[in-house]
Length: 330
Image (cartoon, rainbow, N blue to C red; front, side, top):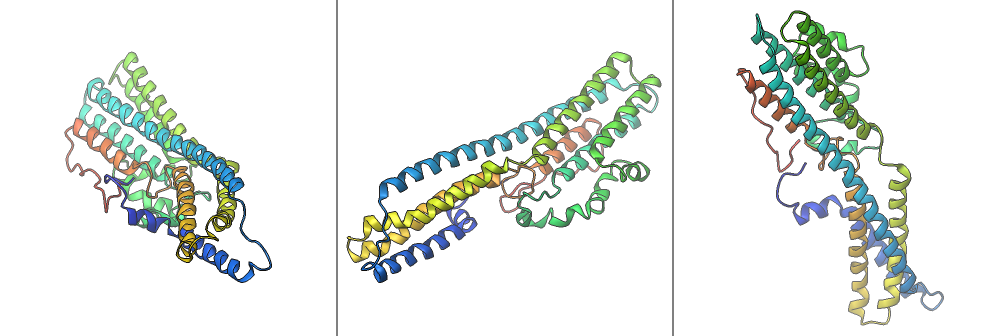
């Protein structure tokens, strides 16, 4: 997530400059061909039908951007729910768990929850073929994370659970799911040992259910891409419009002064850049967990939860919150 007030213009332009450059070259080529062939063939097209196509493309890009934004905003709401439920879980642990070695038990339960958060955010950062894996922020989540998943994850998770418990998850398809299952079993064991009564055990169980629900919602966004028919159509209609646009501009500027005639490719390139910029914004908002510039900052959110929960038990060596680097919060 970009954490500063605005993207700078040159930062935005540099990110989206290829369509402008290609459009500028194409539009100048059209003007040159017009000068060379105007006695033999008319390249200029009527402006009216091209403008109608442009309106249709703009509406379609608006639909795509709205749908992509909905996916990003839903992802943020899901992690907002994880924040709230995690704080409730931590408060319940501190209040409900009573008995011999209660402090040790509280620390165990809170640490296992932080391990679940860590496993979940790593799983959500795994690469999917429809994502922009070549543009992950600072290569922090490198495209080879799928192959080195456990090598990257083990140090962080084993800071909160035993190596034996961690090893038991390696053969499982979904580590985060299994961590919650272990947490649920452990809560039952603690109930059998009378660390809390049945009513409070049910409250714990409902919180585990909420964590499974939040995880499932996040995995739904991660594993089901924005429908490819909508994403692909937006790209292709933008390309078609971009091909026709300089031909329409040619019809407007061909009888103007030479300076205006040679400025028309610049106007064409600017208009095409705006359309492609809208398309790219929607494209990069589709996948809020892919590890690029406009993601939901789940690393920072998870760290904030960890700090809150560990402070509830007056733990030691609590890390600082994640800071933005060059304006980007991970």
